[in-house]
Image 1 (spheres, rainbow, N blue to C red):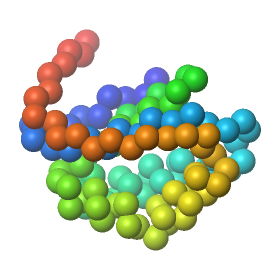
Image 2: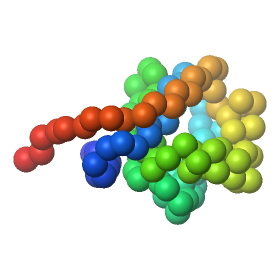
Image 3: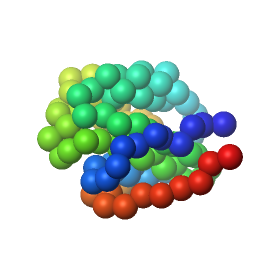
Length: 107
């Protein structure tokens, strides 16, 4: 079971990546793991959550918009973005939102 990201008190930002995958792995799993590890080392990274059924949704959390811009331009991430468009995704949508409130429950 994946963990729910332990984010700080708002405000912070969420990058919501929603996708439909192509058939077959074609190296996707390995690259996704690599990108998650690399993102976690970026300045301003706060956490990540992901789920996949027929639609995949990955939400990464960031301190500020500058951190998101820096991650988008990371060389290894640019390669993953290119490969995603060429072989892993039928379609995807990226949304960036400011989180102003959060609350939750945990046992």
